[in-house]
Image 1 (cartoon, rainbow, N blue to C red):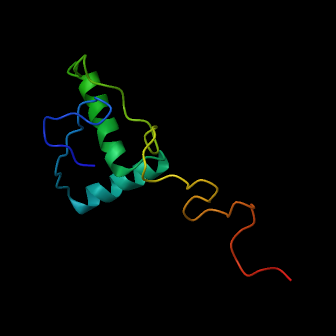
Image 2 (cartoon, rainbow, N blue to C red):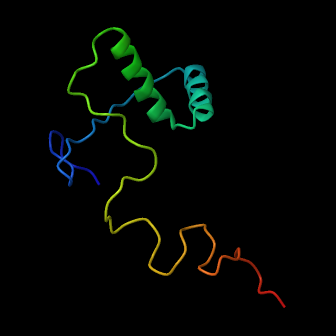
Image 3 (cartoon, rainbow, N blue to C red):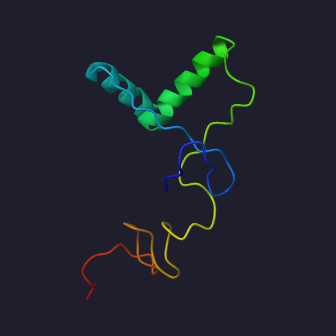
Amino acid sequence: MTVPSGGTAPQGRPQRKQVLLRLDPAVYEALARWAGEDLRSANAQIEFLLRRALREAGRLPGDAGPMPRRGRPPGGSSSGGSPPGGSPPGGSPAGGAPPGPPSA
């Protein structure tokens, strides 16, 4: 969901800023590899590194929130997740058997 700039998200949290970042392709590839090794997205890796650099330089604002947690945000969102009694997208059916041809 997109919230107008300067607004707040539905749970009352300030909106996260979006930034267009142009990188040298080799720098991006190195960053993406590093992010994969740390089990992060490239975006999360950039934020992690920026926060670390700000903290080390004594410039991280005291009111900066924590790093967002991995995965989907908690809450009763009507989109995403598993339908009641169903299986998650790409997951096994409710019976636990992998999808495939019926067994004889």
